[in-house]
Length: 314
Image (tube, rainbow, N blue to C red):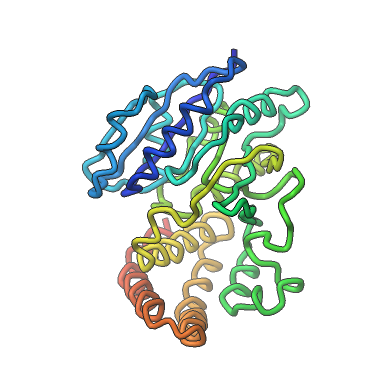
């Protein structure tokens, strides 16, 4: 029987964590696989989201960190608690359907799919609308076009990061599957030494998918299996911090895969061009709150630059 570990990183997910665990319990009735461990790593939540889950019937292992270690680091921490053939990294704002686990594991176990290293499934919202969140591997050129907003103005000429031009109705090989449901072979995860913990939040799954591709593995989107995804997750509570982490992780990604000078160019472009594009966009949409949050994010980014520059030189 195939064994599966589930790792959930929680940070102030509120009642969504309880709903996620409850859905796992109802998705764990198929005898074709065994859920060996459900591991929760709490990154120093302060919202009381741990209280409701004490009454849930599903057995789980809980580790409460005294500080927020970041998403990738917490995922690595959780992965070390199990040894199953597969690890599912699952966001707490995801609710599984009864067949989400069994069909995903069965697909990966098929001899025809032995080169698939990472599997993602179709995500839907409360209106059963499909989230178009499969993504392309970025390059410095594509990131620059996104800074200018060209992916919004001329998406056919400058494809956006997320494949919004594709309806996500068919299964296919992709660059990056949605990180909210990230099913990976443990052999691959161990071979790549897990997620790169320099990415505190964002780009860690993208970086992993890219490294898996470079090793000859396939990242695959399976449209015939679904799960509910609330979307935005807990980072909606701290949108300025979310943008800051995106900006910082983007620099790490470019430096790692394209070199120091390309990363330096991204930094310069972000501070001389992108910031004004973002601020202008918020004004066009009459959003004073987004305007202030954008300023806060770039203020944090500028303060971080000395340390960031030092790290990407290493």
